[in-house]
Image (cartoon, rainbow, N blue to C red; front, side):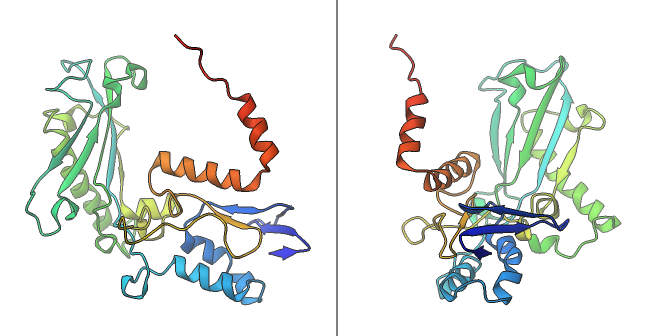
Length: 275
């Protein structure tokens, strides 16, 4: 990977991209390790970097690792809004949560116990055509990957499990939108499973990241012991979620630019005038 301070990445089509400053990977550490496999086997990764990269994929708490969160099931859909409110209220919220059993064995983290739902078109009508609403529902990292592992995405078993997942999510949506599934606009319903996340988002085992326990564990930073390699994304500080991931990208960028460049950027930021 390193050759007189020139770093390179070889794409799947055989093309090589060379850079002088750094390579940044926003893939999870499992995928990044796979991408580094040839460099590791050829001895281009030093022992300290080897140990560091291995530590990032250690999910065994007993040996100091950080276990991964479970996966997700999602549903996205457009629905007919006829007769439904056009603005959010206490009786018809834009976002709500449904918890089936507060005393479940793992609490709200028990599989298929909590569903988070949202209808953003209640806040911004431009998100849906006139007379329609868009909605989204998902379980927050509580779906076991093991329930889906090894399934053929084209099999009837997989299709049946997707429909079961959709039924569970629709039932939560219908706590506030009765008959929502019957309002679904044809061609808009999309169901995501752990295999969906693994395939399209390259999430190893469908997870969204490490399950860090506050006060006992910390997320890794962005610079690695392998010269020229930086990591960013939700497996790094400050963690999971769109705002945190965006912050991770900004922190990584800040690591790569000089202090004068920092000041130059700050000079471009215009604060709003006082009212």
